[in-house]
Length: 418
Image 1 (cartoon, rainbow, N blue to C red):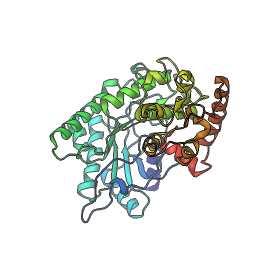
Image 2: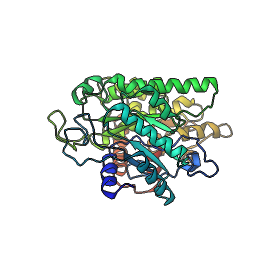
Image 3: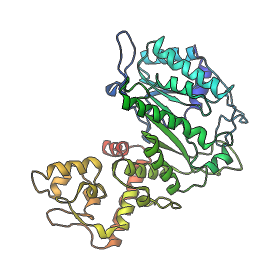
Image 4: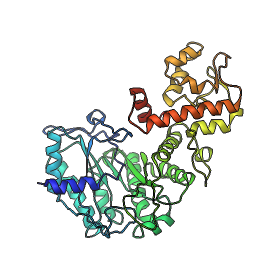
């Protein structure tokens, strides 16, 4: 059994990895088993900044061979070390699950002994949970770079989601801050897992067996000099080529001292803007070039959709009752759900501003970019529109980056609608 001291060390060491959302799996329970990772089986809890805390998040070991400058567990760091066995992890998961503390597991590890040995122990842990302890709850496993493909593929058959963290947005930064890692060591396992998923789908052989909830990754923002435009181009490529479910952005926090690292953090606002831009790429049909230039950073004053709209005022206002879906999605204040509601409702009646309010469209933002039955209630002056959106944006930031003040604000943050 894991003692309290080791548990404290290994859970504390795991807190910097944010790529652990628990959704998208269809793994169901079996007779006599424990847990259920299907859509209704995961009970989400969230911290004020929107991160999921429904999983037991733990490292198998924080005794690392690598010396990544930004990592508090790097080999040269003077920290307490701890390691647990596969059976200790399994017993902890089962005991916590039976006490209703958790609904699943996020398991990672520092690289101890060797990449293959570390990955073998992680693989042994998830197989034991499934086969010996009969656990059918959600499991997210963080893969180990340089580990043998055979071990990685075997583990992928027993977990719901895997992640290989990109860590830094460019190979140049990896060489500087994490010299023992390479771009290939991080991307190649993603490619092979993606090919295995595609092969499984095309052949319809035991479909959904290999990581049914897909892959995620994480990037540290602000530890290296890449612009938001460069970060978002990498993000777009990962979604399109690797089929990732999510890219997570972790704002750099100076938890370790190094001459090669900034002395101050990147701030949560930059992280927040990247998540908003990420949402536009995934659900609103935006290309990165429309959102942010290659060497540019996102505006701190306006969210990315508002910033785009202000640059393209010649395209507005659009008539809500006739505009195509692609254009409605680009109107500030109309989220993805709202755009689809409008498309459905206008089949039966011409919509006015009162109808939009009932659909939870943010009228104070959208009114500058739309007409309803030919009526326009926004500001004619571009300068006035900029001022109104800047005030609204500052209010949103204040609420988003502090404790949620209302259920409406919390819902907006979690759904990403802008």
